[in-house]
Length: 245
Ligand SMILES: O=C(O)CCC(=O)C(=O)O
Image (cartoon, rainbow, N blue to C red; front, top):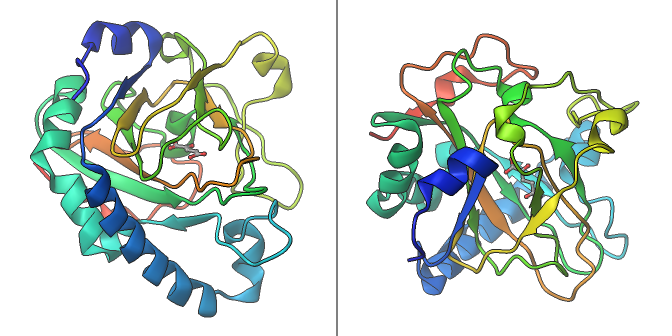
């Protein structure tokens, strides 16, 4: 495993740690979520297709994301409870943590769409902004070509900005352009089995996948057990919060 530089995380608002999990462990998770994705797609109501299907891939119907795998799949619950990961999460936000929300991001080859810049703490609205960290687990190598994450260095130390949603996309909350144009974003490639951690205030986004390779990831949004979600921007299901330590 890479060295765990907590000072870097505190200053920059993110930290990449390669080799937390073995590549073959990621293959098993991918097999499981592919099976889940196939059945999810078959029963997806027409009015939700625009949100869950990747608009960048026109030749076939491919999922863009799945919500709350920690609540639906043993394979992801095992990742969330894994001590190799929890030791790192607890170093960042203290002992006693829960998964509040989780997501699989598929970003398929040849067009998988971008994710606009946002701050997770605007989405979740926690009482304690420090008591929240996202662990973004790379299920494939995430590279400049296939759409790795980009971070705004040090934006963890700044405020949470009001986000806006484009017309017809109420869930696609993002930071206004006037703020973004003052903030350079740095790429953070990570190898399959590595984890990219980011603070809830850190600006982050990802570009389109122009390569021939998948860029799948499992994002686990961890919170301290005592943290409360006082001002969530979207209707999260609080009953799915899973205490893991
Ligand atoms: O995987 C992506 O492209 C976006 C990830 C993200 O926004 C997150 O993990 O909070």
